[in-house]
Length: 285
Image (cartoon, rainbow, N blue to C red):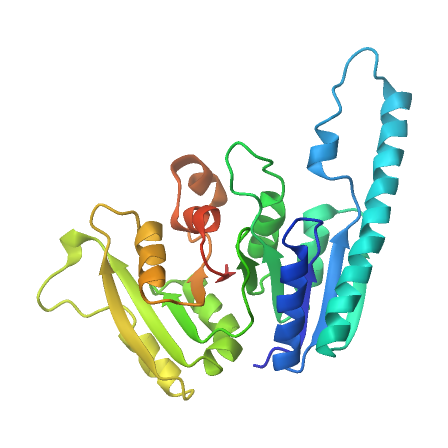
């Protein structure tokens, strides 16, 4: 399936310009329609300024919310101009959409009718604002579509020459690969990486990903299979280290093979990759 309908979120972050440019370039490369969207609601940073005290009752709170909503609407107009300009430079058909209410769930609903949703990694600094993770996780879990998440820091292009697939044979991994097929077809190099624990390594061990390589070969995609032994590293660290060593441009992995609650409590590969990503991630659940 080709990419013909791409959705990108403009969220007012410092990465908006580069994210919009990449999404527009991706739409140009695939002759796709680009939809840019913004959430029309006060940002969490603004809401956190409100301290509920006896001095701030219902009327005052309502007045603050009206003011913050007006600020959000003004910010959305600026984002529309920015998105429209990015689409104009790339020469792609463009639609602007404001999601008024329903927040992340509303964005996930729109993403269900797109071939790909492009989001940005929220600020991963543990002492900085943590807004935005609910948006990324909601779209990943609820949209049923592949999601491309761009790192908070750095500038990236839509030319994904070397695609790395983190493969464990899961349903989520299969959906991520299916969603990435248009990008895999255009890549110069594709590597399938299976991460195993040191205790699983045996002389006759067959690397995970051989079957996937055969499947991709039938689509005309020649993929090499590699294995990384996690050892003392967590799986996410091993994957990101391998991606850096082989100069991958894009990492394709399944998202949330276990529940979000369990990942939040005990950690997980998906959450670690999202928090520490150094390259664009294409994920699906």
